Image 1 (cartoon, rainbow, N blue to C red):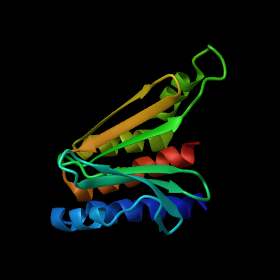
Image 2: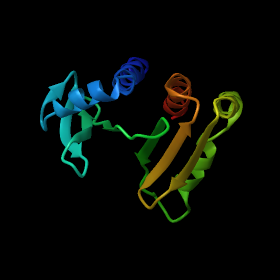
Image 3: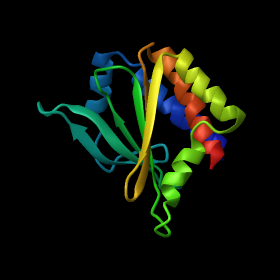
Image 4: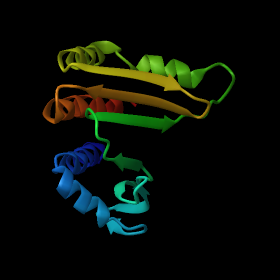
Length: 158
């Protein structure tokens, strides 16, 4: 189930991100709050300062997974976070952040792939969320290879 979900998520994001800017605007303009697409419900539509739609928040009905999708005119990038409320004052969420990143053969592979992809990344832990972000200046094809590797690594790690 998780493998299929990650493939569908990657396909959905890839499809939207590979649209031309004009086509992307057209797709985003059609998004409406509470509309359902596949198993996702649109919770809200994000507008820019000129009132044009630039993205939306989608919630996967079966799992509750939240996907915020925004078209940002810059290098391809992703920002992923998980809710990680602490269970004590011992810093478990922050420790898990470090354990997730770069550990083991797969972690080293993803870190090497990032370097070879002209990418960069970072992570931080807030009071209730742990956040991971990454980008590449090598274009969308390279970004989606990196995105797939990182997403698969994060998803399978947990």
